[in-house]
Length: 291
Image 1 (cartoon, rainbow, N blue to C red):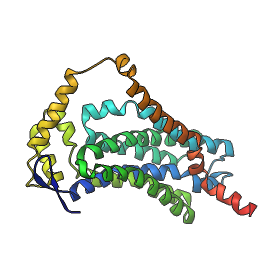
Image 2 (cartoon, one colour; image 1 turned 180 degrees about the vertical axis):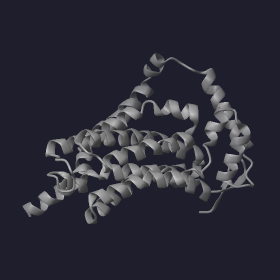
Image 3 (cartoon, one colour; image 1 turned 90 degrees about the vertical axis):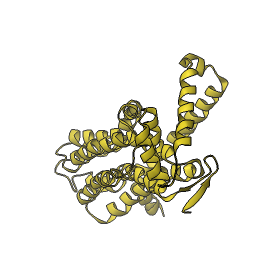
């Protein structure tokens, strides 16, 4: 679908730039997926000094594989502050630096600690992407396609995991790791051409820049003033109706939402999803032997 009719502003909008921007933002998710999938093909190649200059045993490899999740958990908290201060686009682009450093440490690791630090840094960048990319995608897309654009992030994470499985199965893990390490750089090259989130620009009172961003995303003939005014009214309403955290947590709707949100994440993680992702190769090997 190329064009659609915007009922709120009575204007025809162009959809494909929003889809392109959403896919570009989700490119970071592909890099996250490649990092999550890396342990599966790497385990049989690294344990026992097959492709390393230093020994790695089963227990150490388990720590190397899983420490990425600790980095993800830590970075989810400060990334919101960084996005508010520096913007969605430039915060996401800045994550390319730790992502590349982390992969560099993993690729040229000379000892167990070096590889652990590399995976931890990759986790920091990956967790930040998991917050910033979906928010950027939600803010650039109009309501009619927001759900579609929102699926790109999870789709590309899974694609990145599959990519790491396929590539890691046929080439040495050192070469595969170099390829995986290039994915965040590729994301940066593509995403730098994308506009900043117009929502962020309106919040920062940069209306002229917000107009340019909206025109890039909706088409040159689109007049974004109505959308900007609606955003400003929402911001003003939020500022005038601020309540304390204690009062918010006392609402039944808030408690219900927290239970659902944390419950979904709890059962997802307790199902062992990361164990399956990290050890998919060994799981299939065991099934094959049992057969």
